[in-house]
Image 1 (tube, rainbow, N blue to C red):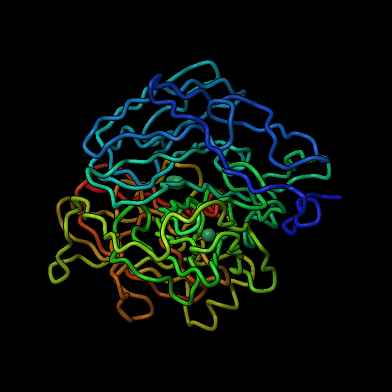
Image 2: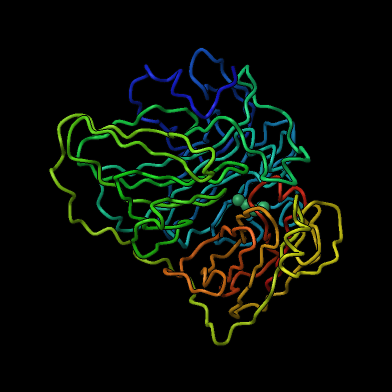
Length: 460
Ligand code: C2O
Ligand code: CU
C-alpha cells in the first residue's frame, strides 16, 4: 500500500500533535546539506532517505530581525554540487545562489558563505537552485523568518512548511525525477502531503487562541487551496509582504509552489471543537489535510480585538504613469498548441524544452537576457499564460505589485515575488528595477523550470 493523501485510515488512532520544527540554527550560522534518514510517514511505513539541511526536513528555521545582516555558511556534504537561493529576499545579486549565473556551484565537500542585509520583515524560505527539481524534491528546504520590530500580538506564531512527496510503497522517494510527462504536464505531483515533514492528524490548540500561521509551499508542483471551514482566516501577508488584512477570496487560501501566506486565525472558544482544514485546489482530488483541535481551558470566550495589520516594508513604489512596458508570453506544454490557436497567438519556438517565454526555452541558468530593465525605472510586465496549465511565476531580487488580471485591477495590489497565472490568464505586474544584476524569472513548478520555463531579466 502506498502512503496516500487520504491517510485517515492509518492515522485515525493518533493523538493531536504539535508539528514540531527543529530549533534555530543561527547561533552556529552553518547549514550542512547532507543525506539523512527521517520519518515522514507514520508506522507501519518505514523511514525515508532524504537530502536535508541539518539532518531534518524541513531544515532549521532561520530567524533574524528586520535590518539585521544574515550570514550563513553552507557546507555541501551531498554527492552533487548545490547552491542555496534565499527565496523572496531582496539581496545583492552575488548572494542570490543561482549556479553559473551568480556563483559557481558549491562542489561536494566545499562550502560557501552567504551574507546579506535583511531590508524586509516577513516569511521567506531557502532552497537549492541547482537541479532544483531533484534537490528540493528530496527534501532540501527550510523557512527563513525575518521578524518585525513590532509584530501583531498573538498567542502562537507558527510555521507550516507544506510539501508533497512521491513515495514508493516502501516510503522511499520515487527517483523518477525529470520525467517527461511531469515536465510537459502539471509537474511532479506526489501522493503524500506533509506539514513540517510529518503527516499530521490533528494540531492541538487552546480554545480561543489567536494564531499567526505562516504557510510556505515547498512542493515541486502541488498548488494548495486551503479551506478552513467555519474558521475564516485573515490574510495579513503574501510572499512575506504585508497586505491589507482580508478574508481569502472564495474562502480558499491559494498557495502555489514557493508562495507564502501569513494568516491570523482565532480558534473556537469551546473546548473540544474541531476545525477541519481541507485542500480543495484540485476539485476532483479534495482531501482533508489536518484538523485543528481546541483542547484545554479556553484562553478567552470571544476573539480579541488586537490589531492585525503589519507595517509595510520599505519597498520602492512604482510610478505607473512613467513605467516602461514589456510583454512576456508563455507557451508550450501539453495541449499548448490548442490554447495558442484559440487565443490567436503565433510564436516560433526556439531551444530545447517543453516551455517557452516569448518563443525561447531557457536551457541551464545562464542565458542572454529576455528583457533589459533600465535600473531605477518602473517597469510593467504584462504576462500572458498561453498554455493549458497554471504557472507560479517568480522573479528574483525584487518584489512586484500584482496590478491586474485579465485587464481588471486586483483588489489589494498585493506585493509578491511569485504570482500564479491561471491557464489563458493575463497578469500585469509592476516594480521598480532598483537591484542591479541578472535575475532569474521562472516558473516555480520545478519540472517546468527544468524544461525551459525560465529566463533572465537584466537590471542595469
Ligand atoms: Cu524559489 Cu528561482 O526560486
Ligand atoms: Cu509552470
